[in-house]
Image 1 (tube, rainbow, N blue to C red):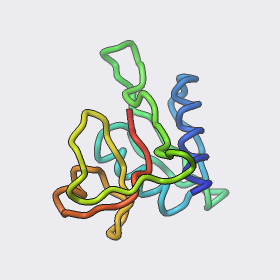
Image 2: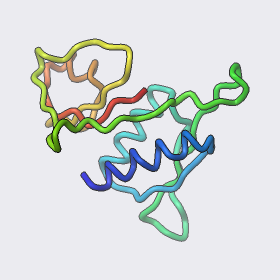
Image 3: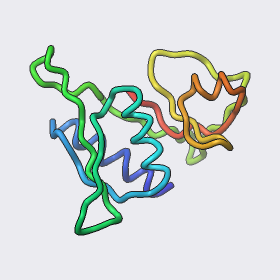
Length: 127
């Protein structure tokens, strides 16, 4: 989970700096989160670095209607008193932000987890 925290802080830093891409260490959970963000149209995509196979470059999606600002506004780590919050399938609520949940079937959004009637651990909130 240290890599997840590092990913979220690098993501937020680059969003605030207005950069269009960033480089991060490639892990399975980070790749799952990046793929979900691609499906939800928050980022454009990612590529593997050729010289260093354990890192990826993530590209942000720009909102051209708002003078090239980023579509992704931020990401909030879901920790409460140094503990992860676990939720049951019946406790998942529909809210406007995207919530990423780690379930027994992998990382997915809160809506996918609700459809599959799966509970899990809340990883982060995408703003």
